[in-house]
Amino acid sequence: MIIGIDASRANRKHKSGTEWYSYHLIKELAQIDDKNQYILYCDNLLTDLTDLTTEGLSEKFVEFDQEGFQKIKSPHNNFKAKILKWPFNFFWTHGRLSLEMIVNRPDVLFVPSHVLPIIHPKKSIVTIHDVGFERDKKLYLQKSIGSKNKNFQKLINFAVRLFTLGKYGANVMDYFSWSTLHGLKRAKKIIAVSNFTKNEIKDIYKTKLADNIFNKIKVIHYGFNDKIFKKINDFDKISEILEKYDIEPPFIFYLGRMDKRKNVSNLVEAFGLIKNNNRDLSLVLTGAADYGYDEIKYIASEYQLENRLIKTGWIGEEDLPYIFNAAEAFVYPSLYEGLGTPLIEAMACGVPITASRIAPVVEAVGDSALLFDPLDTTSIAESLVRITTDKQLTEDLIKKGFNQANSYGWSITAKLTLEEIESL
Image (cartoon, rainbow, N blue to C red; front, side, top):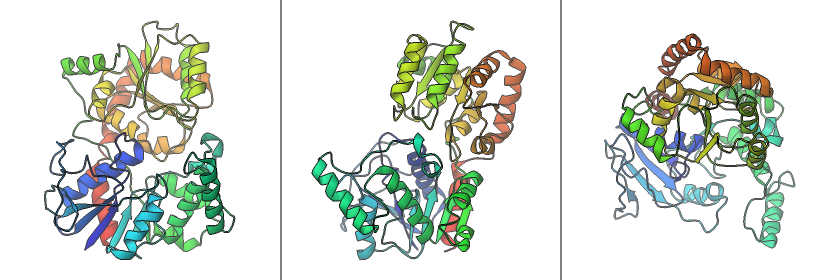
C-alpha cells in the first residue's frame, strides 16, 4: 500500500505542537512499518527528515532519484519525498496538494492536521488537535490570508466568498472554521489527540454534522521524545545549556507560544505578585511571541520584572530537556488545549508541575500536577509559591509524574495511527 503524508508542517524550521507531532510520527512510522511505501509531500526541499535511521536530528543531505523524488534514508528503505512547488504562501494544501491528488493519488492520504485537501483519496485521515478557535474567538488573532497587497487581498477574499457561497472570507479564523468542517465531513477517519478534543468536536459541531460522522473519531494521544526527555544527571551539560540562553537558577519554566490562548499575561502578573517572596527566583519564558505579546510586555513593565523575566525565544528540542531538569517547577497556565505535549515532557524530566485546572490538562497529567484557576492571578500566584516551597508536595508530584509519563510515547502513537491507516 502507498501511504501519502502531508509533511509540510514536519518540515518547518521552528516547530511547535502540530509540527513536532507530524515530525515524530513520521520518524516512528519509519521505524515500525516495513510493509507499506510512503510518500512525504512537502512545499519546500525536505530538511530534517532526510535521514529517518537516526534517533535525533541528522546531517542533512539532498539527493533525488531518477523519477524526481527526494531520497530519504529509512530503516526499511520505503520512504521518499515529493516537493510540490506553489507560487503562493497560502492554500498550498487545498491548491497544490489537491492537484497532486488528481494526477498521482496514493492509496491512503494522512494529514496530521485538520487541513484535508479539497481533492483527496476516499481513504483519507486527518488529525484534529483542538477546536479552540470555535470555542473562544477572542483568543485568536483575526488577520487576512494572502499578500500584503490590499487589492490582491480583496481579490482573494472575493474568490473565497464566491467558492463558499458567501459563508466565509479570506481570513485566518474563517479558514480554520471551513477547513476543519471540511476535514470532519470528508475524511474517512478522524484522529483526535484527546478525549477532550473528541467531546469538543461533538459539542461544537453537533448541529453541522450527521451523527454517524462522530463514530469516525478515534482518540490517540500525543507522545513525547523519550530518548531525550528524561532525568539528566550531567550537571556540566545542564550548566552549559543554561549559560547558552543566559538562564540563571533558580527559575520557574514555561514552554509554549506567548499568546492569549496560552494565558502568559496572567502568569506574568501572578509572578509579579510574588516577586518579593524570593528575590532570586526568575521566570523563564520559552517560545515564539504571538498575539497578545504586547500585553505581556506591558504587565512585565508595570511590575518591574525586567530583570526577573528571561525570554529565550524559540528553542530547539535537543536543548529543552536540560532546561526542564534545571527548573524549580514547570508552569502551564493555558486557557485552552488539545492535550499539551510540554506537560508530558515535564513529567518525564522529573520536574514538578503547576497548571490550569482545565479538562485537557487534567487528562494529560492525571493527579500529578498542582492545579490552579487560570483566570485568577491570585490562584496562580499561590500555586507558584507552593510548588517552589513545599518539598513534600513536589516529591509526590514528581513520582506521580514519572508514572503518568510512562503511558505516553511516540512509538505508541505511531502504532495506533498505523492501525487506523491500515484498517481503511
